[in-house]
Length: 251
Figure 1 (cartoon, rainbow, N blue to C red):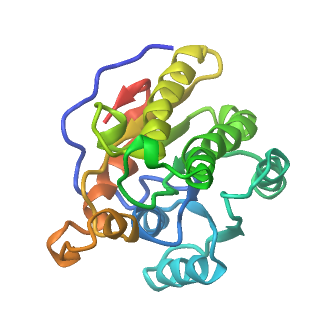
Figure 2: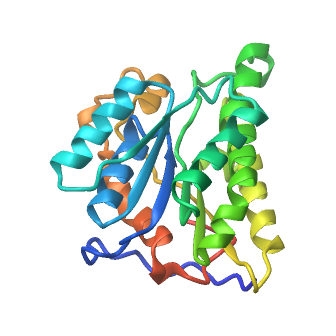
């Protein structure tokens, strides 16, 4: 599959049917970037599937989607921290039963506790960070690949972090997992074939107003940090038809 270079900044607005009829699964959809993307994608015609740990948060996202005029979302509560291979296979099977295909998959869920030295990372945090930030995205994508191929225009986006793209101290298990995610995405992109292409890209949204951000910068005034909505346009572009042929890139 061809791997084109990143283009200039995406448009800030899209046609109302930009994602019309597309089925898009978003992890971490109860809060932050996942929530903002779900609302925006539904507003552009997508059937969004919300995956997250807390049912109440997913329901709140669905309420916001309906209030904005989008189609009701499908909710799939699952705790990625303890999700097994079989649990994530069940997600794909449910999608196949309900929709028959998958056009987009965005991994926005994240596990982060605090900045720390590698030698101070607790075993539990190490395992949970790798599980949520790396193993679960791999497993869910692996199970959903047949559905993404059936789409004919499948797009997978892994939400990245600056600490995964250049070596920085105190990133802990989170940084290790995010660095591995970059390799995972690139390798998968290079393995795609022209007859059944699925595009894979990573996207670093920059600092955002979110609960994860607050854990790392507890003294920061969140109102002075950009809202997650500001990072959504690039994701909408990566999920839509205008980014066809763009794969194996870091945005």
